[in-house]
Length: 351
Figure 1: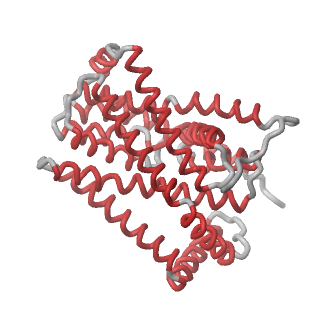
Figure 2: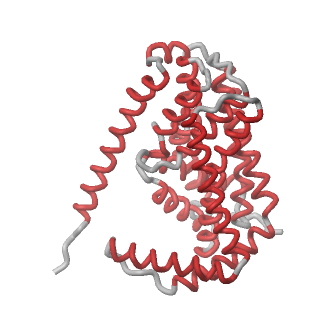
Figure 3: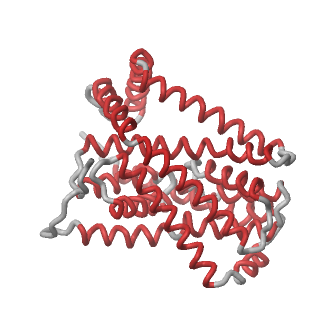
């Protein structure tokens, strides 16, 4: 007799969401003021001086940065329109920002949207792997930029900042070396596919799910498609990511500047790099709480004003976390309108 596990899964999910939400509240309400040496009343008073024109300029900068990333997405999925890519960004981020470890749910939502745009499962799978790996590698590599900026201007680097940067650099170099070796060398590719297959078998047994069929063959095909995609789309993939990260950094600097934080570009770069790396933490939605606390701690350690630092970090999170949620709702409504039955459309021409 089969046992219905849905109530148990629902209960477990509810507990996980409750714990994650509690952790987020604790980090923002108590830990963030502690590491900065400021308080919420002073911070909110500082934020109240930000003008409507300043908010409009920051919003425009935020949107331009998101548009830059659509070039990466379009290069990873030939035929995807830039407007569709922007909708995918908003919808996926909104779901990820609402749930702990919500990235998987975000992928499911965007996968369904791309199917509605007419793309195959194989193409979407390749897109998901390439954009996910590329985005995470970029965020892990940022501490190298932050540390390099501090050393370039001769700043005294705090041990915690140096440690975070070194860890990020080491992980990034290891992953890059592994990916490049697997793409270029048949032996390395076979070894990596074997490791992934064994890990998949162990994981499926652990969660009591059927193992995927012919995983080595699927991974081999994925490798071949990825090689072709990276060869043809390397310019927009690299260029789009660099522009996106740069504009996000400028947005971070702008959020600090409008609240009166006058740290130099090297210190701002170090704080931005730390925060982006910490968004990889899955204990809270989008790493929220950890990113703000870590960023603020680095900036204060580098001489940032406590209240201005806390205000600037929260303002940046308003754009990169909070505003993405209503933006995702609007983007999904636009998506439903674009893909409603009877509306003619076709993918963007390739080539």
